[in-house]
Length: 99
Image (cartoon, rainbow, N blue to C red; front, side, top):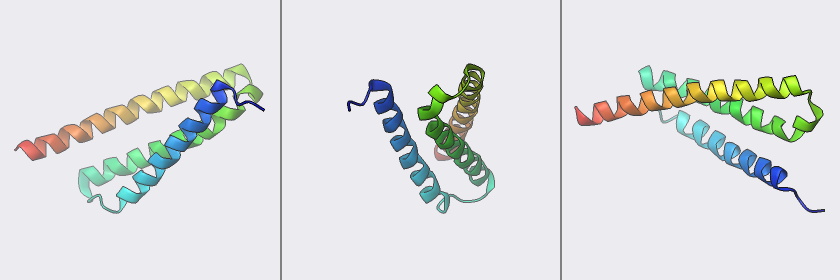
C-alpha cells in the first residue's frame, strides 16, 4: 500500500513536533526563572498544544468540516501567539547581550 503525500507530510510533521516537544522539555530545566522562565513555560504549553493538534490531523477526514475549520483557526491563532512570544523573548535576549 502506497502512502499518499498528505499522509507522509502528516507523519513528518508529527515526528518534527515530537522532536520539538522533547527539546522544549529538555531545555526547561536549564531555563532560569523570571521573565524568561515564565515565557518558556508558555512556549512549552503552546508546543504541547501544537503537538496534540498535529496528532489530530490524520483523523481530519472523519471530522465535520466546521470542526476542521475550528481546529485550523485555533492552530493559526495559537501559532501567532507562539511567534509573538518567541520574537519578544529573542528581542529581550539580544537586548541583554548588547547592553
